Length: 336
Image (cartoon, rainbow, N blue to C red; front, side, top):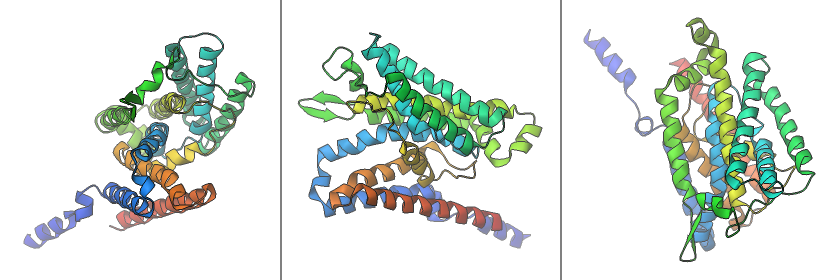
């Protein structure tokens, strides 16, 4: 009896890394090491303006990543969020610039269009049983073409700071004494807290994980699997709409036809942060930490003389490493 007790205790003993949060802890250390490395290699990287630049990149990527965490947890994916972001921003900006709508109305429309495409993606995947990769690849192409069609192929500048309606840019960055203060990070933290609560303490979060773990067993237990599966994509669409507003607030002009590849930054951030491509495993906090790895690479590599091509190559290897770690971790768990 005593041997069984000792064996059970030994079996449940966790390593220091596991107690500290597992992969999230490792990724957080990597973020710190990367910042030290880039600072040592280039003194300019330590400047306040560089930190603001990193945060500027992080807003729209983080918002997309928070949203796409939910489809990933179901074992799916949403490839339309990058081109969708641009499409939603173009339509909202068009209403403001050419139709005289208030900026607040343009922002609401931007979010609503994101939700609509989220519903479309959810219906294609959950109700029509299309593979998530194929379904969202199709809506990726649709949003890319639709946004350019609506604006006639021309870029749309949302109101600049100081212009009428330019107040929305202060949601993410304000000026105090001539210095840009990146307050957008506080909104990101707030949203991470809210969505962590949703994921860990609500039916929506529990059933999202359950679908990714075993969809059929979840259905047999009496859960309306289709509804909660659709809702995962609706949340993703909502956050793509919020990301569109963040992108519009940070950059001067939104260009049609762009946005392809944004989704990989978001999905990559989620995977690096510990969200499993197989579903069920991961959380929003880890996603945010993973996003900073991606943003540090995008901002830091040019400081050490590497071009955009090298940035893509290195980011690709980072994602491969993250996926391999996830696979090895799952094999280890299955072996135990």
